[in-house]
Length: 205
Image 1 (cartoon, rainbow, N blue to C red):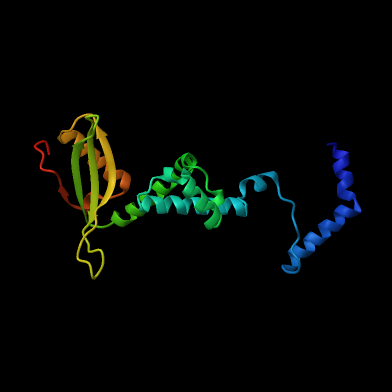
Image 2: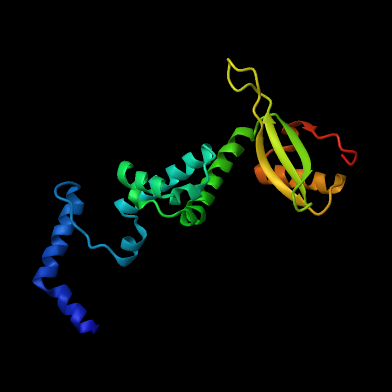
């Protein structure tokens, strides 16, 4: 676009009229809001109402299925699909299981993990670790933390939370200790908050 064309537009009566209205609205701080044209960037990045509704129902569905230990593959069952589409608001926006797993399950896992971390950080905790082997003979180390405080005033029990599951090349005092330390650092648990470490009494511990 030529500079002369831009200059001509800025000097036109239509442009000056719109400019005066905008200055007047900004100066008064009230009155009718001046409509502004959306840029391509704002239009592409701002989620629409339908997109937000789709994300909300998908996040909630994944959360409920995870809490109830229901595989996401059940979403593809014809009876479940028909129920979601006919009886659940925005249920028709729920995609197939593979897309829920790729786009929403990781997000739900991250959210739950953050919630667990908040329950154990800056509190006295007991670290619990247990080593086992899976069906392919790999060494698996589960690391849990239990805040040393009652769940509530009426329930005199503590709750343990799984912090991490590590697959080790070997199980000995070095690999286990390294895994526990790395887990504490990544979780944000201070070494001074660890009151005790409870193991499975294996000889290498």
